[in-house]
Amino acid sequence: MFDTDTKRLYVEHEWQHVDVRRGGASDNGTEQIEISEYLLQGGQTAGHRELWRLIRVLFDEPNATQKE
Image 1 (tube, rainbow, N blue to C red):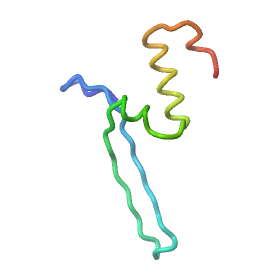
Image 2: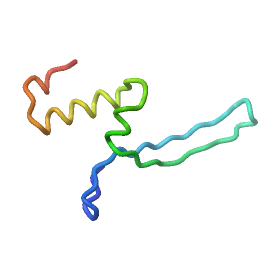
Image 3: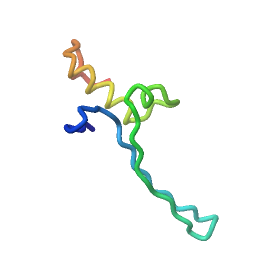
């Protein structure tokens, strides 16, 4: 996400979770995460891979448009 008012670039993470073991209790929310923090989180999800691809495209790295 890019906030045009603050000129801030960040990852917005939305989640929704239903715990069937606790009578269907649900939890949901939105969190704003700095890009550097997001990329340092454990695990390389599809979101991480796509963000790295977009960063390479933004900075015009060779082979950025090729599939990994």
